[in-house]
Amino acid sequence: MSSTIDIERGRAATRSGGAGGAKGRGGAGYPNGAGNASSAPFYYDPGYVADREWTSWVIPMFVVANVAVFVAVMYVNNCPAHPNPFGSCVAPFLHRFSFQPLRENPLFGPSSSKLEKLGALQWDKVVHEHQGWRLVTCIWLHAGVVHLLANMLSLVFIGIRLEQQFGFVRIGAIYLLSGFGGSVLSSLFIRNSISVGASGALFGLLGAMLSELITNWTIYTNKGVALLTLLFIIVINLALGILPHVDNYAHIGGFLTGFLLGFVLLIRPRFGWLEHHNPPPGSKAMSKYMAYQYILWFVALILLIVGFVIGLIMLFRGVNANNHCHWCHYLSCVPTSRWSCGN
Image (cartoon, rainbow, N blue to C red):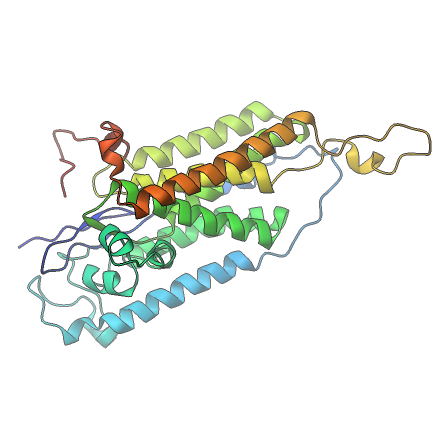
């Protein structure tokens, strides 16, 4: 007897009358890429007036919250208390914190039925049972220890440096809204699986890094190197999403949300404005932002609002986005001779 287990923010098939496989959102490619990019020396012009550096506390708080939620889920899961057709619990010395059999969940975590009960994203429950709160709660759940560690390492590498530069309000908002955006897009395309994990939010931070580079282009040195580095990291991580059992819709939705939010929230004053924002009497004041920054801010805000409104309307009306985009399933899985994309 086999189990369908999904890695990263992948898909776990749910079965009528039984538990499906565990699924999570991951970001295993982040630690070797995104973290280095966020602190690379080419990011800011050394001649630019230094910004205030915030103390990072919201990202560490998110990490603690995710770990605490996982511990609570494992406590509720209580593997030894439930007979399992897949075999014995892993690490029985942990007692009720022991993991489900590896045949059921190779990520060292709880059962998918318990994740579903505690708030995993599932289309049928969101639409037909009016449990829209699952669009948010799924961001804080993880399929296993492996999944949790990958996402939290990625969050530390990407998020702390961003929070030090832009503060907890803006980075916290990008993280949460990107996770929500990833959940919405995932729900529009995937109906027979559950979803958990923070990778949509993590991809949102990557998207915000890219749009921040674009909108603040004039204050960067080595612009080409910075852009190519970020694009390489993003493409590699999105490419991992075409593997089976990985929910790339959550990645793409989170990335697009964060990309638009970066234009809105991470805009910086033009080069030289800090030295000239109090000009002598009679001299011409310098505009704080350049014209293209205002245009990008406005366009991104409109697209963000329209995208969320249309996405939520389609979701709660029960629209299946696959019927309107017959090739979009290739964005989440590309079948090969080695694997199929069926649940």
